[in-house]
Image 1 (cartoon, helix red, strand yellow):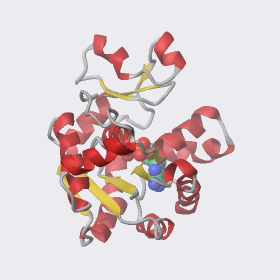
Image 2 (tube, rainbow, N blue to C red; image 1 turned 90 degrees about the horizontal axis):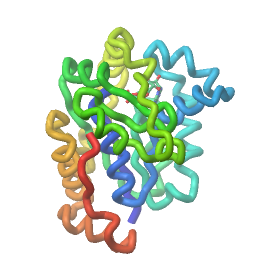
Image 3 (cartoon, helix red, strand yellow; image 1 turned 180 degrees about the vertical axis):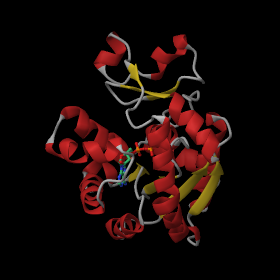
Image 4 (spheres, protein in one colour; image 1 turned 90 degrees about the vertical axis):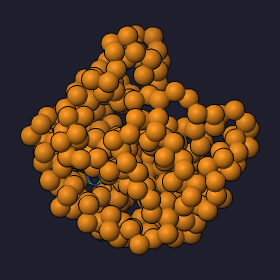
Length: 250
Ligand code: ADP
């Protein structure tokens, strides 16, 4: 059975962190449209040049462009057994396209992480990302000596250590613009999913570990199974051990 998960929620809700852990622990790829676009900007590719300004203003890139990127990414062999989508869909047109892309793949589980706006602004302003691999850290929630543990993704991160920088679109003005766009374009789209039996809501003000547990329970219940059943199914698939929960990364 494929495990198709869509993380919904405003910027700073914790979607990226939770998506990454869930994907790792369940042996499926995390597909983050924000990461794909940031990598393109970083590498200076044609796509990067096309989206750089729009992203810096906190606006959304065009539907056709992003739908094409996701359609291609989800068609790769590693996404056949499932995926965790982070940052997509964000508009009604993207949600309709996702239904089309996933029509033959079994149920798509949609989980919304809810967090009040003021907390989101606080989190996003203190957020740091590793310039090399994109790992996330919250400067308020981690002590300096924990930060190197949070990012071990590339050879460079492991040998020289991560390079923590603020995301260029995380300034207060741009964050408020992103929240405005979220409430105007993305939140109404979530109503599109609300009536589906596979839609769930999670309280994002809990600790990262509690959110992680709530996410596993939400996915299991959307599939009509207990959390322990889901865990043992995944443990079998991964050959045991890998599905054991690890400490929260924040
Ligand atoms: P956050 O999770 O903090 O909202 P992301 O990392 O998901 O931000 O996305 C960063 C930026 O990339 C967005 O502000 C937007 O410009 C662009 N982007 C990402 N995903 C999409 C999408 N599905 N549709 C349009 N633009 C997107």
